[in-house]
Amino acid sequence: MVWVSRPVLNRRLAGLGTTIFAEMSARAVATGSINLGQGFPDTDGPEAIAAAAADAIRQGRGNQYPPGPGVPELREAIAAHQQRWYGLAYDPGTEVLVTAGATEAIAAAMLALVEPGDEVIAFEPYYDSYAANIAMAGGIRVPVTLRPPRFRPDTGQLANAITGRTRLILLNSPHNPTGSVFTRDELAAIASLAVEHDLLVVADEVYEHLVFDGEHVPIARFPGMRERTVSVSSAGKTFSFTGWKIGWVTAAPELVAAVRTAKQFLTYVSGGPFQYAVAQALALPDGYFAALRDDLKAKRDLLAAGLRDIGFEVYPPAGTYFITTDIRGLGEEDGVAFCMTLPERAGVVAIPSAVFYDDKEAARTQVRFAFCKRPEVLTEAVGRLARLRQGAAR
Ligand code: PMP
Ligand code: GLN
Image (cartoon, rainbow, N blue to C red):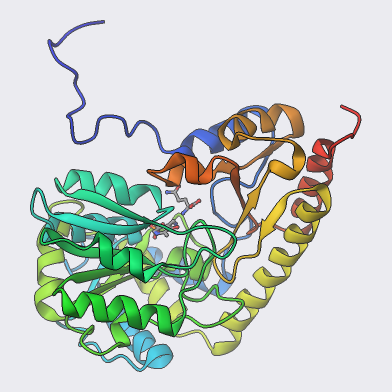
């Protein structure tokens, strides 16, 4: 039906379509496949934290609009978390902002900090909302490519990508989808370029507690970075409640005020009762965080070994809950075609890594699997994928 004389979707958003995660999760449901595509755990977070959310609803805490920056209990818990894990001091009054997931934090940061025509550098592959958010802000995306097998950030290439129009670096470590965790030296090099060129950094740290090898170091800790970094995280991955959508920003007052200006006209506020529950979750003892990590590490090893056995080349992730693989060992050449037919061929859903790249060729043969699933589900998925083994009866 033609009812307007020009495309209804504006030029900034043209081509963004439906997110790959929604598309592939729908296919998993439609085909009854095991969903190793979209990253969400198949086991909910701690019962006591779920009970805290239910209690908050019943007791009438957060059922009406919470304060714009977030409930004080959560802002204090976020500040305490940054101090406890990283020795970073933030004032809960002026330097913390609660958002509708990390997604809104990143969107609001782009809308608040980027002028139309400003360049935003992001390491590709990049999480899919980055391209959309940069576009919404009228910014220009400048990718710097991470390459297999180790997906290290090339700081020489980063330096070359910086121009007089560069406004900020949108950084993600631990990195989705590659599982790369940037080292202290790499972060120091990125930080010194940011300082030298007077750039802002938006640091997406949602996988901060999912690190199996190495350590997560917030870039805000490097010299000259505290005042130019917007650190972003959320409760989704750390507490296995991805549907609650409680995220946050920590940054200097001026940066938080800027992000809040955009945020207040996106959602204003969200998730009142969940904010109280996440405040409790952030104060869980160290043992909770260690158990989460150890559990996911075992799942990583289970899926990695299974995939390797079948003939995938596996790039072992140091963090996150994703494994990037190469499918050439299976006689396959095209990750998109592979993932589109995988539900029918094997009853499993995965994500073609090319969707996370501007340079699609750089990832033509790469496929991402999520391993935040129960061990028996991973084992069943590996069993199904074994049908793809070269020479296996079809
Ligand atoms: N950043 C990255 C790198 C992610 O993988 C995700 C996905 N969960 C998000 C941000 C979004 O987080 P949230 O669900 O808290 O909005
Ligand atoms: N972060 C999740 C992933 O990378 C997806 C979240 C979403 O669908 N927005 O799989």
